[in-house]
Length: 183
Ligand SMILES: CC(C)(COP(=O)(O)OP(=O)(O)OC[C@H]1O[C@@H](n2cnc3c(N)ncnc32)[C@H](O)[C@@H]1OP(=O)(O)O)[C@@H](O)C(=O)NCCC(=O)NCCS
Image 1 (cartoon, helix red, strand yellow):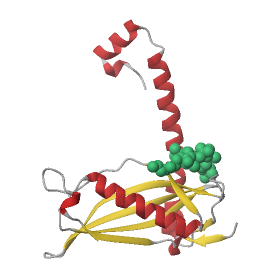
Image 2 (spheres, helix red, strand yellow; image 1 turned 180 degrees about the vertical axis):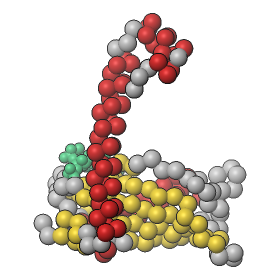
Image 3 (spheres, helix red, strand yellow; image 1 turned 90 degrees about the vertical axis):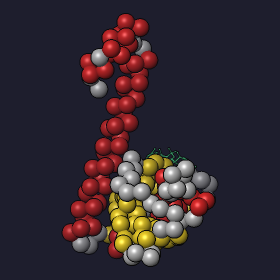
Image 4 (cartoon, rainbow, N blue to C red; image 1 turned 120 degrees about the vertical axis):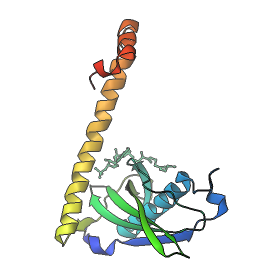
């Protein structure tokens, strides 16, 4: 599988947020932003892989600022790391009040997408050609995040298993003092 340059993976989407996206406070629902993030990740990954790609996982997403109805929301997606059949897409989200002109970076999301073949099975993605120091640093961070995701999942599975097999007395003791449950 030949390589594709990281610099050529940038994919942008934008829209004005409407009252359909509003929560009861009149701000935009986090879910509306996440839907746009998912679409951007999908477009970025498919352009990169030249294949249908599906969402395998979302990393934790923190919202640093509210987005208001009427804001112009822009998504910028880039492929930051690739495995064999998966790639990590990093999406930066910006919201602009068009009448005031202030553009704020509201959050960064990371989505793992998997390329599928004609039979719906995972299939290799191109190699990611990282030319600049920044691209190489992003790739190394992506590699570390991939390992951390795996470790965290294994850790949580072990914890779940420990809790489900614990005695009532152990559960009561940990419930009374959650810090005593080493995780
Ligand atoms: C994602 C999916 C294709 C993985 O299929 P699978 O049979 O588990 O595939 P594999 O175990 O061979 O893993 C394939 C790749 O996906 C990655 N992967 C699988 N599950 C993952 C997860 N939960 N998070 C991150 N990466 C994951 C693997 O690390 C592997 O990457 P690599 O090839 O780069 O090493 C499958 O679980 C699926 O179809 N999920 C539903 C996807 C979907 O419908 N999304 C939209 C939800 S509405």
